[in-house]
View 1: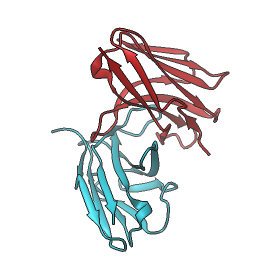
View 2: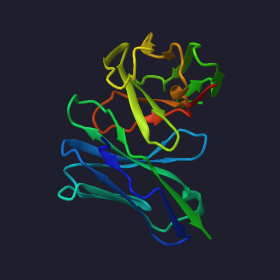
View 3: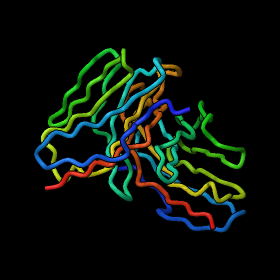
Length: 114
Length: 115
């Protein structure tokens, strides 16, 4: 049972344009959502997060939008740069237990080309 | 460096052997997590430590898997009688206190290959 889904395995974007990565979830008890970026042979690196009580969080070129009614979140990268080419994972943290057990999607591979 | 350190970075072993994977978290982080990533999949939660205690072991796939943490620091994940389906990248993460929403800092993982 996949509680966090990233339905696009890959995305190709031109440098300078917007990248939009999507994530859907099924569990309404998720309290926090996080995006991680992963380069080959390295561990995931935290990018940005959003609490379930908010609908938008922005950090520089990265913005995360949360639509609770649709159980959908998205990560926008503007402008996209070649160094953004990586696998992006969406993760969710359920409230129960009060600690940070992360449930990950399968990832979306982003390629930013000149 | 000050990041999460994992060893070995790669491990190749024969089916049926036991393996030990080590994680050295960021100094002072009380929360420690183990995940694994199978080919083409997302990260799968295995176990959570708060200090030396493991309040959530729900992700361990079978009783061949065990983990311990000593001194509130280093953790070891042990897989006994390895099977080919155990092949994956095993990732360790730590966070300052494990508070909900607190980002986890990951190591580079151990790539385990079972022949």
